[in-house]
Image 1 (tube, rainbow, N blue to C red):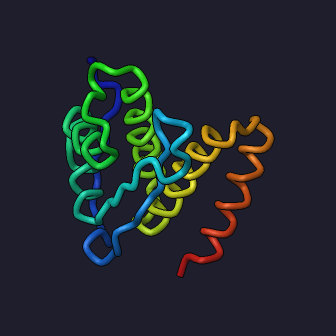
Image 2 (cartoon, rainbow, N blue to C red):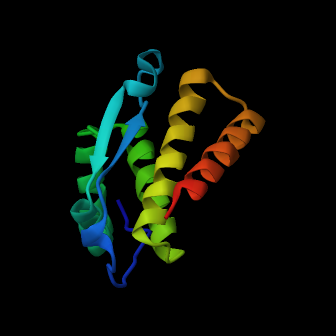
Image 3 (cartoon, rainbow, N blue to C red):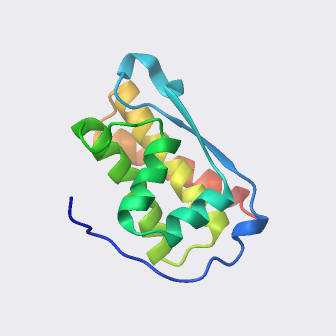
Length: 139
């Protein structure tokens, strides 16, 4: 697997953030939104942001309970989605709080879109609704 991403920068604010929990539905659509629970702590986010791509993917695969991500296409796509979402937040220079909010929304929309078989308009509507709620809740 060839690295496709790279990032650098400071980790201001990471140590003061609370862990965030995300419900992830991957693989078994029948399992619904609670198929996987993932907790990303500020320290784990810092580890992901400081790591090279392969190490970051390894951390995310463990957090998302996707141990076969290197050989299973479905797991690989999912772990890449998680990584790309965090990478977007990093490159956009979002704060840690905003990163957790954006990541939570993206993961929830993916999980619900899969579980509920949402169309793109429905998924976008859900994303807009959840993102606005998270933005309003930020300090």
